[in-house]
Image (cartoon, rainbow, N blue to C red; front, side, top):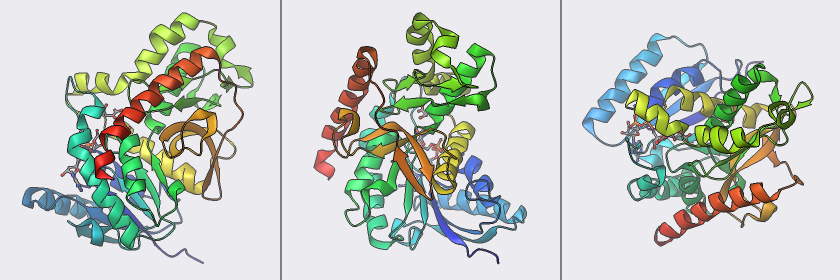
Length: 328
Ligand SMILES: NC(=O)C1=CN([C@@H]2O[C@H](COP(=O)(O)OP(=O)(O)OC[C@H]3O[C@@H](n4cnc5c(N)ncnc54)[C@H](O)[C@@H]3O)[C@@H](O)[C@H]2O)C=CC1
Ligand SMILES: O=C([O-])CC(=O)C(=O)O
């Protein structure tokens, strides 16, 4: 028997990530090739943005996707999020050259109080939320805190792009296929302080740390390359990553919903205090996913270098949180 459609909200639907994301969701790449979707698309109440959104919807129509069971354009989160099962919160200002993601906080934070409140009021009680708009961890924290009637664990931030970037760098360095890398993670904030960690990673059962065996490369090349990749893309393209961000959003939601088959993936999730990360801080952690739930990988050894890196990214997140406490 065919499945009933699920409702997927995407904000910033006429933006560059939206344009790389919607067609893949409608093609079944996020929720499965047997799962029909209704897209509930949100853009700002501005004539130009709404017109651009209509154009994107015309193109979606022209793809004649068999799984696209419906499509709606909205300018108010209270209608866009009605009964949604999944919400991808992409719409927010991107940074330009010379900016850090946290410089966007004052411009973007209010978006996530309003959208958190709207999700709280009208979304499905099981809604799974992915925050992509930057600074993603703190925006996810704001949305979660603004939605007290929804389970905290349903709010997540996107660290998957960082995870995928780290995997590609390791594949290039070792000459092994990217798909063979397991047990990789990125701790902390989606910012240059993130800590991409391959100490536990394996390729075909072999330790990646031993295969690479070069602490200087880890510290001086790998970590800065992964941490500053977003800025390198902006420098090269004149615009921030869009297709790779959309791809990571698909990976994040697909694994959350359909399971990671025992593999570690990185998700930004509200802490329950593990690894000495205070309760509620939305932090990149290694997780496995099964039956629509994520489970933190616990009990990993944190050595002195890792503790220093984790403390640094935590400090930045706590400062960001402090900067938005007047909104909560
Ligand atoms: N977490 C991550 O790994 C990544 C996050 N990003 C972030 O994603 C966000 C979106 O990036 P792009 O699509 O490139 O930007 P964009 O500027 O091309 O599109 C953003 C869209 O959001 C819309 N928008 C703004 N405020 C809104 C609101 N309150 N409700 C609904 N829509 C709203 C705008 O009208 C625009 O169409 C940025 O904050 C960017 O920094 C980008 C890449 C990776
Ligand atoms: O760097 C940016 O501003 C966009 C982003 O988050 C990324 O590419 O990781």
